[in-house]
Length: 268
Image (cartoon, rainbow, N blue to C red; front, side, top):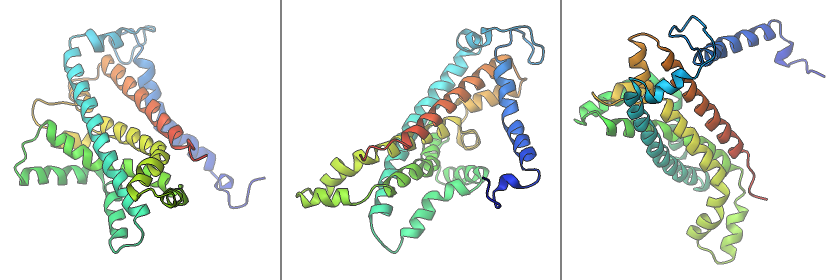
């Protein structure tokens, strides 16, 4: 029985839904299919082949993409780790810190990067680095990624902590545990699904970022998204489709893991 106010009953709902899905996912499907094309052309199909996946690892541009991958994964890992630690501390203060004057502004400050257009963040970050004389390079990318990954790590951690009753900590302190011991031995293990989920989400956001990275990176350093963009400017090649498909697959796997980990209930 469908309720009267259900949006599915509105005229044109199915058509709009189908069109949105087609617009969003049809290009991804095309890129994935043609990454297995044996042809040198990106438009002419000549049969199934893994030649372009092999080309990514041993082809003429393999060294460039391998170095870009090393930069991307190392930056994403460090940025996600630091952002998750900061987000965990922030969530503990906001959710478990009780009422204090700057609680609401603190929450707004943490989540603000999600609401601000990424191009604005990129320009602001670039101006900030230039104003303090910070030479652009690996470290500028890392610092920028840490900053904008914090809210993505924070939201799953906050949601997890809000679902944990404070009676667990009170029971631990009734048994003579200190607040630090109650946090470390009781609350932190219960928060772990949210922390892992936040880390994975921050990792994939950092790994896939292009706009901010392109603004704050220095000459001679590339991440996978910027390396792909540089190659595309010279013409779209089938090996770019292979790299894009691998990145897409990794993103899907990590987001899926993050979703299921966040749903894991270890309070029972």
